[in-house]
Length: 461
Image 1: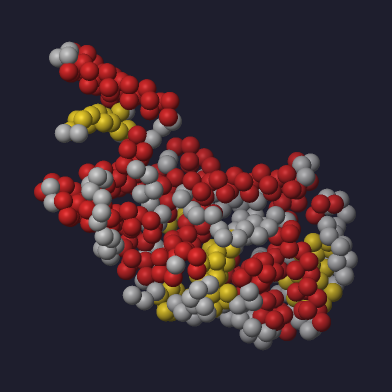
Image 2: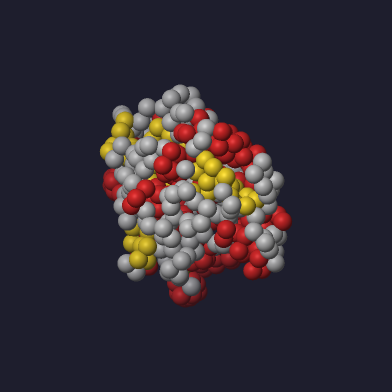
């Protein structure tokens, strides 16, 4: 099998060929931690978690070095600190912990490396010094600027030319810029800014620009040329374009061999964003839905496509997972099979085609039900192995069928277990009225009792 991924820079699918199959480097831009992440922010960690799992399955679990950064110094963070009077570190540590807990609930494996921007300011200054020395950057009144006209092929990732940029849109307006497209490498401190947002530099006290942060962190932990750089489609310009400019002009070599970008989530026909006020946070969604449902929903569309986020999408994801876990329960005891993935692996090898992979997973569940109906022991073993192996690739089916179907907290489950046992005892004593009463009472709580050859169990419905 051949892994092919869509390279944003090449504008086509390319066969993936790592620099070193024993050390595959993947960098994904992480969160700016000043508030709760919305579900759109969760799409990159889920998408690139699937990619990471696929690379680990192909090259070995120890072969993939995955860095996802934390941006803990940025204008929005400073604004939050000034508004609340809370120290920056307190804000960023709080929301970084919430973010990591939220994405962990979506079965996202923690990154190999989680660099924080504020721990890499010396590395950022070193790159800026090199750019100034090479005359790709200059010192102005408000900071140090990268000179976009000094890079002849600037814009090759996004396809945008500097003259296409609108000042004041995604390009900062400053009086000391030589060209409207120039962007900040270092921002001088302004009156009233908190001291914990200010560092010393050869040019004056201040803080790094946003773009230089990822260039420095990627270089330090993964090297000057990394295999895959990923993030949301909104980062193509200006963030990733500017990363390329900084890193390649400073070091004279390619920053990333492949660029991958996921599409937007839409809410009511509009891109989900904090600025539009149409967000729903991961934190709030997890109060009502299992994390695996959110993950499944995020994978129902191809990662490069727009995904419309609706209540119906979540309901459908939950129903599909219920069916797949139900099939897994029927073959759960049939251990010892050999996994073949039955199309799931092949779908993911084709530019992470998760809709096709989920369809293949659903087909395996159907085969498992058929095997259980026919009491085909060997096929039950095979489909069990396939369900679990495919689930591992997709980050799904991480619970036992019992854990999935019962959910809830342990005390509540223990209470229901006791009632189910009381019903079993009532039936054994031929107290049919009591047995029916218990069944009806549990049904009113949304609990279904399932009687089978192995005894009675239950699930939430």
